[in-house]
Image (cartoon, rainbow over all chains, first blue to last red):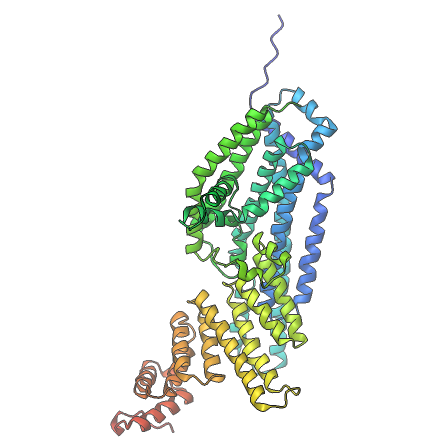
Length: 300
Length: 252
């Protein structure tokens, strides 16, 4: 007696994982990680130039440039890599092979999104490690110089040296940089999810890129639009309508620009950090759901 | 498909309406913690290039500030003081929470640029040279005042402000107040209360208060029995005619 073949499950983590790892491999083959070399050049080159400045200026510049570059690179990577994913699969016809198997479309999108998030996670981690290594190296060099100068100028009080070293250490690494880096990752994750949503109805990769880049710029002004809408400013009704639309449609990307102030010494509390990444996770989830709704009705 | 996109658009608006209160709450939490306080407006636009402004709007404020700071450093190496002043103005607008930028900008203006103005060989008129020097002192002072307005609890900025008032503008009353503020915000720097008292001793009309402050410090901690404090305390004793039995013992 022949038994019936087992029906494929409606949801499978392992299928999503396979799709995610394949997406990551595919992106890695596109030599996307080469941009990390650019980042390394920027951070190392910057630190060599900064050696001309005082150590406080040098560390501040290093943090400003590195975190700024991390934000630029991860945001660009999120938009460009995600915008290419669906059109490329359609062009290569791999999407038909995948969806012909018992793979629901929401799983296909989840796999793609997780693959991109893995790429962003690895990139952010590698950049953060490079940045912290250069910061540590420069800190060690400045402290070693201080010890050498003390040995040369016999009679320098050890308390003065200790105070100087404490100042160097306080100016270099501080733990607030870590939440700063994590928030940069969440901003990139938001952009990836948003771009995936756009690409479900986009007619080409270029269209998805342009729309996402426009959203990126407008998103940084969303908070201003929201204030104009809700703070009772004296503006024309149609202007209020326009700014309300901007506030409702676009994400508030300034909420994820904490690194600017972290570099300046503003401390991040755990509550603030969790709320910020919670908002990021909410955006990622909702844009993914929207992508699923549109993609499920798309004719391929 | 079009129907679906329309439904998603409506959902997007609904999501927007649901998240706006949450975003406003997070915005308030951020501002309370000192985040998102930089003023990016038309005033800034008039000071930086269009690309710089777009970059600042795109969440790269600190990055743009760092690049402009490097430009300012190059301007310093070329002794272009006017350009430096303009760049410092922009950098501090972009990064108002960075005490380092306020401090360094003020130091460059009040110490380096002012000195260069005084020794400017291209200007034979000494009055004009001194006037230019004074203008740079005032520029340095203004930078620190704005820095303190943005970072009111920063002891380092208060201390720098005190030093500038004392060494460049001879405003000892102001310096006394600023040193005291620095001491209040950084109790680990034990010399700050002494500095505040020293400046108070040079502030006309506040000698009695200065004496009380110096005497309090003298009595509070033997570590304060330093030559500077003893000399000023004796000076105040003489000035105020303190009875011999209440005076501090003469040092051997």
